[in-house]
Length: 351
Image (cartoon, rainbow, N blue to C red; front, side, top):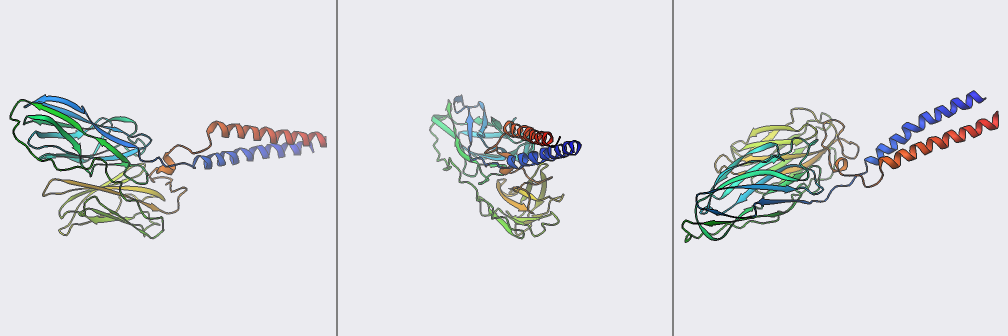
């Protein structure tokens, strides 16, 4: 009888450990989405230069609690006072989704994190713009963000997590100061992008872009195969870059037809989970870019999280709302001790 009780005790302990570990894993799945908290600023925010000098402005990001996948930076300034020389990515955003373009009073670039496994977090430089002063100004000239500047968080709802931006003010001394111009207005705080529809196995997710030309639709009828159809509209002949964010982002480049229609399917099948799609369209006529994004889901997935290729959404990225490793381990060992003590007491009764 004693041997049988010892064997039973061992079996109980052996079973209790994985059970507790399982509940620990389930507890860690209970997570919260971080609210939009990302800000952008231009540094130096106040500076004085002379006509003919080149000023290098850093575009700085502070992500707060957000984990950022990509950002579209679009700047506006007085074309009679500055000539844009270049705009490129910064140290905190190692990937370029859309090459930087400069025009008369504008500069735009779309940058991204290395991957969703290594998102942009904290504070740092995501872009650098070089401007040449070409006209004097008795008052500071603003270099500001346009209303389509957006920052895309990983698995956030809304997708656009940018809450505010801060312009740079540059005084230009020397040269002619009698020339006046009217700056186009820019909205300092962008409107968050719309979010996706509810998860249904055969649903169509549509995301209107900031401009009427760019739209995205994701057809998820192919849930079983894991190859959804991503399509939309852009300017006719536009170069469209589509990035499906997963643990290993998949990027495709297509060209819109003469009517502005485009479509693609991911090169690799996707497992069940929630994904973010970021689309950037380069207009071949004007050289301007448009960016939009949406989210969609495939299959069931645990908490909307893909097991292999799925995007690590806010349900899998944010910090746990409750529970901790230390608490769970204490409960685990306490449970094992109680089971062993109970079995030992039974053994004494029968011996």
